[in-house]
Length: 383
Ligand code: ATP
Ligand code: MG
Image (cartoon, rainbow, N blue to C red; front, side, top):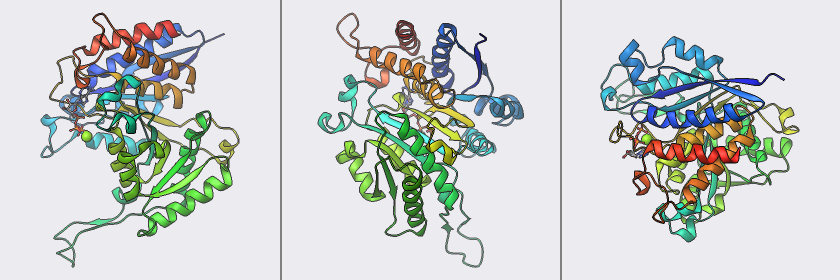
């Protein structure tokens, strides 16, 4: 039987991007080589600052086309001081354009400990941090980031500036369905914690009503509660296990809460993310297994110019992003789990000398490549 073939576009980007993506690419190559029934075809394209340098724009048309045609996209990181806020063209414009072109409205960021041996790295007390397992689902292309705004010094009202937060019923419905699908992929299904500011904001009252009605009608089996954003941000540091499950929230609150929750595991270098497009239909409620029409997977960290080129960046966030890619875009849960298990084993295992393998961000001296080698080697034993 012919192997099922998937096309994955790799955007290594700038700074440590190329260093960390090459380790994740090796992981995907191993899976492709070992699997009897699938193959993953990987192709790299220019994106970000490196594309500005070579062709004058961060998102060249050929890169966009490849991304539109691919089954999924794996990205490193973009940007750096070379293309700072005063540059005419900035790498970040390319990322916004790509998100918009692909309609990536659902941003998914898990915050958990890949291994309990990392508990000591958390800024929270181990008794508070232990067992935290949160997935933030953030609406990414609506709300106050995309509403009408007025800058200071313009219009008749010269001494004021404003931004408007707008949500429509369909925008809230589709992100709610994505959160529900993600909750259903776990066994048992995860609880949903919807976060808003419904005691003040009209857009939040719409949010709360639509989330409640959508889940009651289409996913009645899922547990749902509501938190105000102020008390939720307190809970994340005071008693984060109370929010275990899926945090479902709008763009601005999600930006803040996903950064806040990502601090819990102790290093930016460990955490993956996904940005998805394509609305699950009502019928998906009966048949869980939503496949996004587009998915962009990247570590949550930036291009880390301070350590770029030194070969010391932690590749785990990017490797776990590749696991999310297999899970959500390619529907290969078995291989996603194998990668996560390999990462956990490598972090837990003691090496010669009695200590664990750690990159510099976690207080060790293991290089990017060595960490990749160890994860690839361990993964092979699990496939
Ligand atoms: P951006 O604006 O692109 O999000 P940032 O200013 O938030 O970037 P990062 O580039 O994420 O910052 O880096 C923040 C700090 O974390 C830096 O000191 C960087 O070296 C460190 N860091 C980020 N990613 C990693 C990684 N994968 N491994 C090790 N250290 C990292
Ligand atoms: Mg940042």
